[in-house]
Image 1: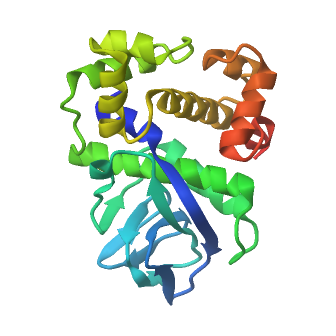
Image 2: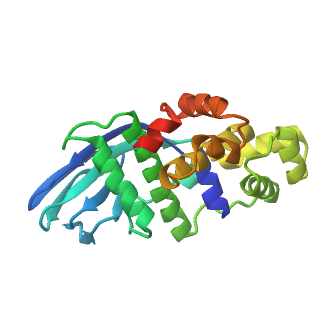
Length: 257
């Protein structure tokens, strides 16, 4: 996992608004003055000189409204949101950038967000918000990795991130992470927060929950208890409590979605 991908473990979607649109012919999609994501679940359309198909997504900032031309029956996810939790320089995304479908997982995830959101034009529920969170973070990651943005110059922080990624289930403390970084606890905590935008242990927790969420969505044969052990929780009860506290939904609800 690269430094950029690791740092994205700290990004969270804030105050999401999600609707599903089915534009017909020429239409206008309202994106508002926040960050927004336009993702195609089914069909094809043209907008701003671009042609989008299933799995393609467009990230916008302060777009207001976007005229589109749908080529036949088309289903889209239109999300408006804010981002928080990572170093500000990592969030210096361009005002408009295309994230083409790069995997079957992304295409299926967009479909699942659209299907979970329910009736066209209705707001999504808690599970939809969690799926949207995952979709946005995946898209932002793809954009930043492709652009080579956000490289980490602090070698100690890089070593600590690498250690967490290599063994997420370990009982990490600030002291053990500082040992990997080769600096004192106080210096490490300050440098980590400056680079990543969150505390070391908050990052460990978010990284574990992100790994668990991915497993729940993509590995239906793996039990919740096994997922819990994989990411460092001694039993499924403590895992479920932490997951619900920080994700707003139980692991079983994500699995069922």
